Length: 375
Ligand code: SF4
Image (tube, rainbow, N blue to C red; front, side):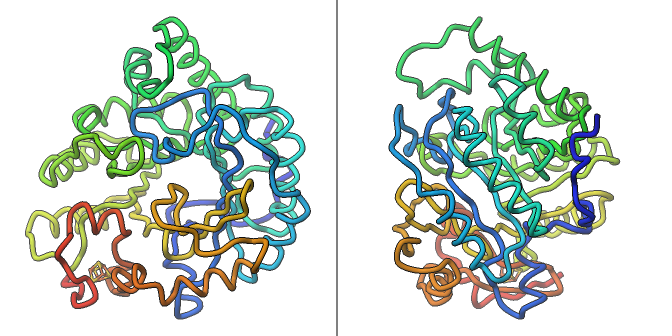
């Protein structure tokens, strides 16, 4: 059965068509507009990964959500909405949330022609994911492992009690089986790996497993020091460049490989950076996505209604859906001093500037607003 058989006639997601990339709407409207909304569906999760970008927000219990009709109304008011992402925690943690909250949002999006993504660890029973699959464009998973041992080492570091290897191995197997089953069923599964000190020399092997599971896309992002990851060592820029080159050497060139939040810019005068940027442009089926955070996306807590520019909430909320519509809240970001620091744009390089975490991690003293792409 093709699980996407109810899909509408929207264009296929491809390296040429990535509606999450803010450069598309920037080019269309001549400025950044709100096209992407991310809803934090839950702060519950059955894992506690070492690197979790929202780890500090995870809880053991949670209160009521915003009423569904209010969420749908707020989405309806977003004039240029193109994508909705549902994130957590593990958004599918409770079956009731899957049926009563997530499914209606996905159905709304499908009817409106808006593309959807769920960020999941896929470690729960297959049935709940199969319910969502017919209405979903992208099932996004994190995959940073060569085997169950890796998964055990990384996935429960911040758990309140030790998790046995046997328990972790069962979850790993279920994640792999679910990914294979959903892929065979026709769902577009995109697996994201992060480049950090654990993974930077393992990426080709991780890539092969992702391919074997039937995933359609492999996303690769460097890890940045946010939330649970804030104390972890960062890879150096030379390590990062080397690991990307090696992955490009060994990857399946037929699979879409999407890089994001890379700290390499066409305005750098470093020969190594420019060589890598050229290679990324020339490789078949490789894209470098401009980061939606702080460009075309807002994140909403479905508990408080608070609205953030990122899902990891390092910055205070920009507003609340109880007080304003989302386009109004987004307009506030335009003149926010944080945005004005990094909102450069070089059309010829297809670059919308660094995300704030990237700028803070590797370019603390650089004024991007005074730079220009040189290739
Ligand atoms: S948009 Fe900003 S970061 Fe990108 S190449 Fe231009 S100046 Fe550099």
